[in-house]
Image (cartoon, rainbow, N blue to C red; front, side, top):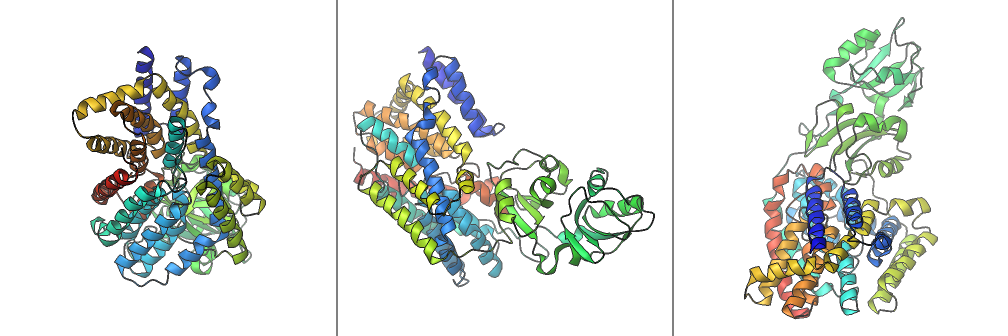
Length: 588
């Protein structure tokens, strides 16, 4: 009993930190594991067994395969052809949502969203509509697609392996399809035909409503004879915190030097292209004896602003929680930060003091060569200024062949899913679809660490009898209700949980409870495990329930309260579609 209390206390504290987000979820999971080891609940020699668990290996392999599919160009092919759609909003949203749902069934949810996000933004701009009408359905579609297959989302992999431990046989590749597809189809049609009508029409067009009116912040300053800045480095100029000046480019003897390094020294008659607060720019020019050369941006960006990029900060990005000043983008990543927007509004305080959050939109200036590496290093997803890359046929065929072979092997049960997918991931590397560097970058390490740490915590919940105690409490509350209502109660609890914590964590915590309920009712665990799998992916009511929701928050200009309006009816339709399907295909 004492160990149960310890487990409940640790889980309760973990949920608190998950919700508060003051500590990243992978760190919270590791802390929970350490406490249970110190308390003697988890044996020390089993503390890190979760990192070798088949679920962790499978998730890592799926992420690598997803990167290979992205690099093959197959998704880009579909994405480019979407631009031929008409301007009807219903057909645009419906087709976009259908495609992202289809692809997220076979690749990482965020990866599928990342490919179609720039397409949705282009459609919105071409149709002169707010991106807010497109992006939330797109994010929700990526979650719906994950319900349909074993590899569509980490919760399905986790639930499959819990079934293997309980019944000796896991759920197979397409065992999720009957229930997941029922829920996904109902959800897609709701979003395409009706759901977008519940979304706010946030204006983010190209004229007076644009997020970043960069011409208001860019000026050219000529270094006059006798300037106190002559001979000083650009690093010394930008360190003058009183003015918060950022040198974007330098023109010397008619030659343009984009994004000059901090050690570059200032010469007489140099032209400095700077980004600064207009109210402070005059003081800076007077202090340094510089001539205001107007607002002409030709030296800074050339024709067409080819070196301006917008990117959204991923929730697990390296820069989350750090300030712009501490990141030092210019010297470490070769990029200048020009602006930051949050929830559709440009932040007006000093850039150096802004602490980044997941979903923030950054306006960056960088040289086109190597910009993708810059995005990857920063942990950002490109929005504007990103061209679709159409993969050539020879690269599409190997990717489809490798992935298709893995699917067939898994579907027929010739190899265990983790073995088949690891072989496919290795094949992606050997074929050149994923380089060795991209191999490690494609893995979401915070998710891997969280899973590896939480799996022993979930097992402790089961071995100490805590899962049975929770199941018994639910059964007591259910009273004499029929099993189907108990199933619905389990789904509602899981849905509430997955909207505030990571969906994989919700699956790890609720799977033992589902098994406990099945034992208490003396019924098959299959319908209850399937219910948890579907519910863990139904994170539609908050922006923090899943990375996909967080990623569209900034580009769509959404606020926290915008999510539940389409999210609640979508949750209800998923419940209405999935419960009968569970009873039909996975009876008690």
